[in-house]
Image (cartoon, rainbow, N blue to C red; front, side, top):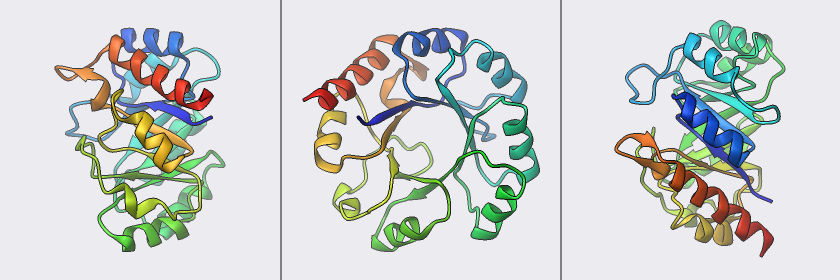
Amino acid sequence: MTKIKLCGLFRPCDIETVNLLKPEYIGFVFVPGSKRYISFQRAAELKSLLAPGIKAVGVFTDEAPETVAELLKDQIIDMAQLHGNESGTYLNQLRSLTEKPLIKAFRIRSCLDIRAASVCDADYVLLDSGAGTGTVFNWDLIKKLHRPYFLAGGLSPENVSSALKTLHPYAVDVSSGVETDGQKDRIKMTAFVQAVRKEGRS
């Protein structure tokens, strides 16, 4: 069954909701300037409220490898998602500091981006239309990608079933698609999770 990541959590009530819904992953955004940005201290507080079995993913953009590794070591996050210009050298350096899973995000605009994602050394790749733009990219570009990937970009309770039928991704990642006025909406989060799980049973 396709796994679920609910990203951009920053309030205790968000954690309460995911503890009820039990997605496989949640995301904390550590990107300065993002409207969903939280501090490392705030993430630690929220992680302490998170139910066992739900993995916390830290979202970074060109953060120092040592900083990412320290957060993984301290179990503030369980996985790291890299959204910047992190190179193969960066990945190797981070891997020398941690054995925790790494996700590299790719902005999908052409077949060249798919080729880059297909050979990336990260454990998983995340395919998006941009850095939190909340828009859908051309799914036809990724139909021949033969590796596990997180699908992001413009997903919502209304279109996630179509995404699963069309692409069969390893996981789906949603943030703005389950928000109202910039904050996570429990009703939309529930509808998204139910849509994914319903499709998985069909």
